[in-house]
Length: 125
Image (cartoon, rainbow, N blue to C red; front, side, top):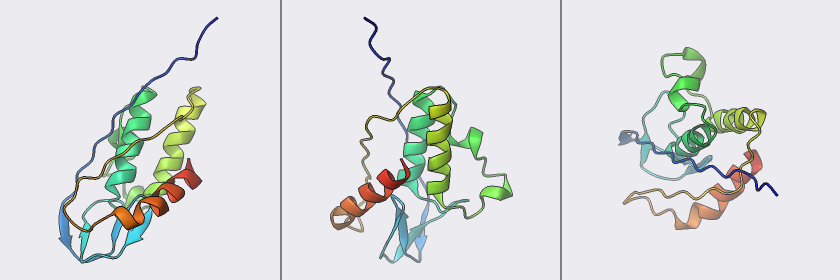
């Protein structure tokens, strides 16, 4: 009896912080006096998940699929890119079983937003 092949992807992303707000994480806007700089909406959590999906499926990384040099991705909602990553992996026969992600940040405190982020991500995945 053959068991399904399980593959694991690890994603990581970092963006510069600047004054402003709101902070976009996990597909939601969090009230904050900071925001992240980036070509798209700079959602580091979603970007890390995208990288993990592409990596697990052997499809390269986020930059291969959505290069920052391409103006088509300027300011794009990262959830659109996440949906694309999921569909690309599915086209190769992969199914997402579980996602575990950690955001490392001193501020703002994210505990109150974890459920909303999880719900939003699940809506896409």
